[in-house]
Amino acid sequence: MTWALVYAAFGLAAALTGTPLFRAGGTPAPAALDWAVVAVGALAATACAAVMRCGPRPWLRGLLFTVCGLTGLAAFSLLMDVITLIFGQGVDSWPAAANRALAALGTVLLAATGRSQRRPPAGTRAPAPSRAPARVQLAAVAGTVAFLPYCAMKTFWAFGGTFAGTDIAQILASSRRNGASAVWLTLESWGLDATVLLAALGLFLLWGLVRPWGQVFPRWTPLLRGRRVPRSLPLAPALLGAATLLPYGILGVGYCALATTGALTIRPGDFSSPQDALTVAWIGLTAFAGYGIALALATRSYWLRTRPLPGPASTSVSAGSRH
Image (cartoon, rainbow, N blue to C red; front, top):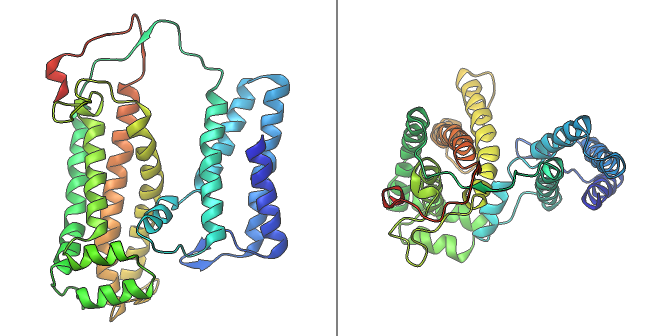
């Protein structure tokens, strides 16, 4: 309830002051869309008040999850904001970033409220560690392969190569203009592209979701080996990543396709020509789309495979499941 009132008040303040809370294609969207934030906040407050008064009836739970979906859409691209802030770069719009952060918080709180009365039966146990089905593992392979051209391009630049009319000197100059942190610039000067490092972490997460070592810490993790991985540890970043990268990549690929056919124009940005920008966009957005699809499938598989089972808690894990 508190979050809903704060979110509605935030949207109202932005609407009355004409501060855009949404962006479209890198430019501010009309401030009139801020009233959608007010409406979502008011709807969430109404639903929460009804739950407090009438209890979690099925139709109220459905309303909560509907609002949860709306806030999830509003939180789109929050992951990109987090990544830029980690490396000391500024976001495009602080009000828009605050809206995405509040929406993401609301998504979690509304989902928790909707599921709060679904108590697990007494005497549950964690299922035995297992691999994802073969089709999900194939999707993980495809998601990994989709990132290879992106990583190769970024690494080629970091080591001084020229691609799409751009080299490391131009990239560093552009990063400085955009307010990149000293950490980001230092990594680039050492031949380590920060986005490639993040991609490696993302692939580690992806394979943890489909392999048994994502459920029980393997032997190569000191102090933790043999212990159960908390279910929320991989699921939280996986859900955030899938909710961000999947639509971002798919919509981006669609945009690239339209730009390729000439239906839309693409701005060169920091590149020497629109064609160079389009080439790089194809590589990056194809990687995000492929990885996003694989991550969504792997997350769903992990969610289903790690649901508690009825029965006494298991106190041991077979050695073969730790790899």
